[in-house]
Image 1 (cartoon, rainbow, N blue to C red):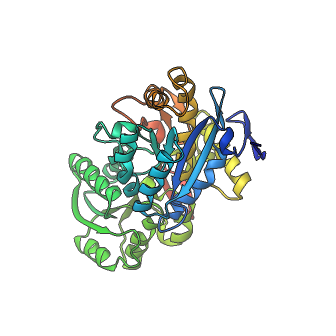
Image 2: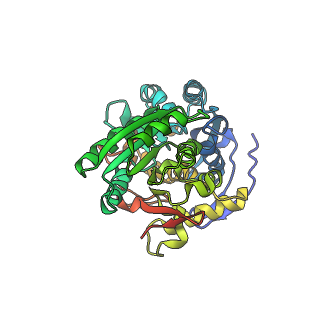
Image 3: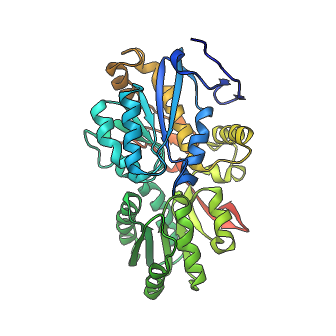
Length: 385
């Protein structure tokens, strides 16, 4: 069968031609499930758009990516994952985009023995570690790493009481749990906790209850575009305290949709948001800049960090595949198991979102090099010094 390869761009990072490979000639198959349509499309679109930038060779083998859209529907995520595992016989998976979607497929990934790289916010996909979750790796910073930076800032700036508004799903659940523990240890009292659905179009009730509690600061735990409405509603109702966001808000559309109403927001996220403001010595700057340039050349716009989480999954696979090939051939259970084991052994791998040091106990692997305190100033992301 003829394999048609269309040159796209030359990436300094990958050191070779990035291409779209046709299926029959590929020796390693990677399935990708993203939410490029539906309520969390602002998360899924940059993830889908990143697939053409992933490495197409590793360990002397070619790699084929099979990309499916789950339309932000957790049930569709399960169907897509099953199709990729049972029909396409993939060796690894990247996705799904949403935390509920990822939580819902862990059982099937584990039963099939296929490693999955989840570019989602909630740490619940890898913590607490279980026999099933050992097949999942997470390419975003865990909530506690991000929350610790925010709580430290709250302590330094005199915050004593805190309100919480989060999504009514695993993302919001884990953030509430982590934040309540860290804030309590720092002497910060949580005085309100409100939840909402990602597709909600009005948060008046939640905002009024939050205002009634009169917190010094409010933390909003929501991914993608759903992070905007709670903050703009608080602004419209006259809230004057500090507003913190999670790394789920780290996308260009947060600034576009929020406008002046999100001015002064504080969040912790990767240096990718402020690349021109971090020193050349920063371990992620060169790789992140290369990814951003390649994405911008291909799509004509800058990517959100959600796309970078998929790019990092490709880097992890590129590092692990040569090791796994020593234990089995692609398409076999032996190779997939060895691939999982090899990812756990990755040490000091710089990527767009931080430096990965993975282990059997830690399937995210980030440290403080994977976060920066950032604020919104004059409508732009600005490094908070």
